[in-house]
Length: 355
Ligand code: AMP
Image (cartoon, rainbow, N blue to C red):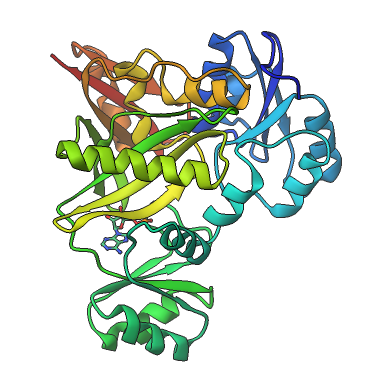
């Protein structure tokens, strides 16, 4: 890959959901093109991308043709099958790199990686069978949360244990999947840092946002977050440490619990993140452009925050409020073009600027 990519070059994006869609729009703003690879038909990213390949992640022929048609490949989600990545990587670079994917695809590997970096994480222990859960309970105690090691998102694949007597039910709920038991963190609130690293190692972090979840799904992100100056610095340094350790190129989301004893890392996401959507209307260069700049070998842009913003996710029936939101002052609507409203489905978001 010759860097920086020239205007007119094509970026491959694995995944055609809303994140792929907003990445594609950001690429277009910089004069770049997007080729989206997505198994499902009618994907949100397909509406705004020059080329869409609709094929499965085990279709080596389609993956090969896709990889040959682009200058670099990035992705909107971390659970891409390893075999698909192998096919692509033989042809074209993948950014962020494989190490970030390997680590974030498995909660146990991720927690171990973060702990080895010297960052605070919840007490945790791997669980591979029912007896292992008893051992883990001795280490992590209760209350605690049992989470599948792989494929968890938006609070899915999780079960809470209030006492050791919940062990049987929790174990059953994992459906035989390998899991990790995490001690419950008594946090005051949740924040996240959206951070970017360029090919030459420059790091830029967006201002941390404060996140509120409803039914396990992100409901709002508010900037500025309630953090002291030193907590803010800690959050940014933690994100930079993770980026550098992974020799990362692109945008990464770091979710943190705020506790009186300091910041505890919940999880990392090697991609643009829902809690960074506020940047679209709070910064000159948003998380999507920052990611495209990084993977295209361009310099990072100015992500400093120029407004206070509250981002609200529009989920399922929230779509019925769109006509009213469309009339609001200082509200920027971002809809994903999804045809069917379903409970729990992310349909769009609104960024409200506070003046
Ligand atoms: P996750 O899928 O790991 O991001 O978890 C979803 C949500 O569950 C988090 O945003 C927290 O609100 C809550 N949660 C997850 N892990 C813990 C923990 N160890 N202690 C307390 N709350 C947690």
